[in-house]
Length: 357
Image (cartoon, rainbow, N blue to C red; front, top):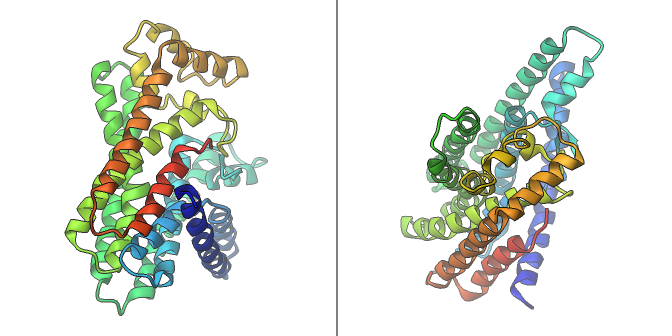
């Protein structure tokens, strides 16, 4: 069995277990006597289903790297998935996205609910306000899951501290991600400095939230020490950066993202593709389309063609593959992970490298 299939087999078995936990959690979540609260908790539970559960699987895998009884970490996997849904509710407000996982986002669902009432701005404010509250609720619910499940575990304090540090690190990355497009659009930052900031977003936000955070919290639950965390951080940083570069490429070129096509263009999203092209002869031309609310097929095609003509696509693709390759080198040099468990991590890297959505 090749490494991708080794990971897929582990992923399927683990995902099935986490899905059952999520289903049980979602049913219990909506048991509220107040209809206004209950209706919005239903929206959260709806978004909290049908996810890929990759991060939850990595929590379980982090634990499994040290201990074989990985079912013990399933509640921690659940908490991480609830945390993910919560910050995506907030992220959708920031990005002004109407869809998530192919479903209406919380703020947009509430905006639509009251289309016949009030002013447009009032409905938008209502939708955003409700989504902020629901996202906050999910964040604290995730903490509660961890405390309830592991209150008698000697590693609880380390687990909660690490989990909260991941949230804080993710928010730091999000802050740069929010500010940078405005600065770039209004020429408040040197074009030469944009890529450094983008890489910092990738490191703080994607690497920690998607790879380092889930693996590390699982390792800590299993009693792992600081040396193990450092090794995983080096590995996870490379994987996370590669994953985000790939995500940005997919965001421009794929039709299967679960979001509105061309959203990254409309949002003036700061990516390696963008930071490269603005330092080429195609800078003025891309600025005619990038950040434009017109998401016609013609606009999207123009942006796609410009990224390829400027070699920005090749630049991003090469950087992505280099990061993936370096992560495998780092993994090969980690001595405390057994070879059969390294194979799962190697399969995970290849699984990510081969995705198209």
